[in-house]
Image 1 (tube, helix red, strand yellow):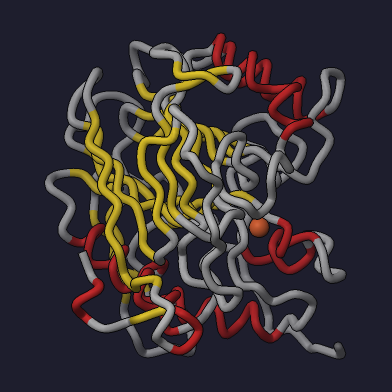
Image 2 (cartoon, protein in one colour):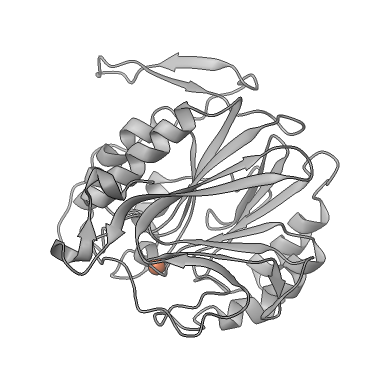
Length: 328
Ligand SMILES: [Fe+2]
């Protein structure tokens, strides 16, 4: 489509003090916003991360944004960042939808840092990462990455690494070689938690998108396992699933837990059915919409919470029920 973008400004604010609250406004806009700078690398417990993916811009998406906003505002002590594991606006080449998505996200993103990975809706339909890279610059230069599509950042006791499911991932590729360097420099004393975000889940037990990440998993799973990654966040499959710690398709106490949060609320609806029987590594799965919250309690314990924002039902329009009774 023909589209004239509004001016897109990227402002880098620095230096900002860890944990300090800042008020700001945008020229030409009377509103004043406030945000708190997440804690710098090191101890800051308990620390909350808001998690979602495949958000889109429907009534269910708004419910997810609103829930994340309330969750982050009510963080027990420290609020970290909100992570979107790919598939943000579902603009799909209609670039004005990037603007409407940002307006929907504003109540959350104006007050809480949002960090992202790219998904298929950021690259396909002629998107080619253009809308995404212009609007969601990530700290890739600061993490010595040559692409906005893979980056890392330390937030309190967590080292966050974000990867690209739709970029070259084999040994020798820019992304793979960067990941090797990034994992090698993780300091588990300073950041005991290692959290990797990508879009296409390495493991899920849904009938949709079966084994789409097989190539990336074959290339990178061993590297992530050797580095002791705690949690892998993904989306893509429009449902919620949590695995037990696992490696090479089997439960493994030293492997990461996979959190598949493609249940953010987009217009494509939830993906069902699940495969039966459920594999032994699948700890919980549900085809409703919702969001996740990960609270790091100390260097060895964390609490993960998934909250439902809309139920899956065969009776409601689009099989999604947004009644308050569905909230959990
Ligand atoms: Fe996707």
